[in-house]
Length: 268
Image (cartoon, rainbow, N blue to C red; front, side, top):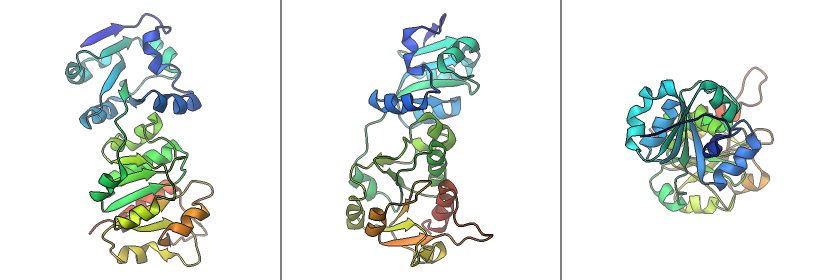
């Protein structure tokens, strides 16, 4: 274990953790640098268990015993340790979840191998709220979704808020970012998937009706928080589906809708 005690917030060696509250900067910087931030001891452990490799650790000294076994697994990786005041001045917020780590991003997955081993897939089109992304991944992991595909403009599943809300389940559900959307939909169809978009259309099936069809392979397409799915996507999918509402409510939040859909359409 290589423990480095921080004496100043200006230490250039901790640039990975500088001003983590600047959302726009992190969105641009983390993918470009091939890294992401794992926040909290539990999330950090799940990242390591998934085979992801740390580039450094960042924690208050009192958390050293709690993470001793993880630090010992990576003796050449620096562990930056400081007072709560120094850590907060670096990150821009109080580090109360134990520890952080700057992690190397894993290599991107390829579509065909992911589809070959999947029966239930979620596709996220242009969802921009990181909290929703994290909640969808957590539901996907809990309710039997085998993979998640995200559109080119979708928020980053490895942004730290997404990871934190997902409780680290983003590491256990295979996912990849699509480069051709919605042009990739014929490839899913060729792989045997029925593509079903959650949308309020006059001819939409109810979710119960879709679930009763017991498709062997099903891809559920979820749209952005405000406008929903694009017309080009709706023109390409096999079917649209809606969740019947009561009480004058027209729709659910996309993360809540995903959990309902994943459960209703789960593999028997």
